[in-house]
Length: 67
Image 1 (tube, one colour):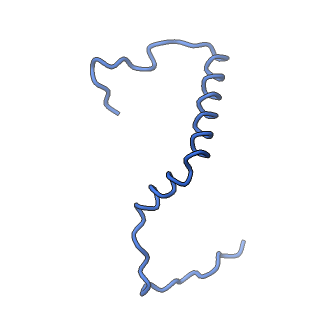
Image 2: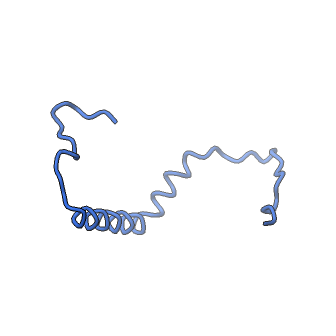
């Protein structure tokens, strides 16, 4: 990722191990809450990248392989 010259890097500051753990936990909780709230929108967007299924394509593996 290329940052503009006038944009400070996020690694220019130091935090304690405890602070880093709390920050990581808070960010993960925020990300999970966001995903739960907007899951259908995220799914719809990601599904838009999938090509339409071709009805003429044969399905070679109708059931999952046995374990």
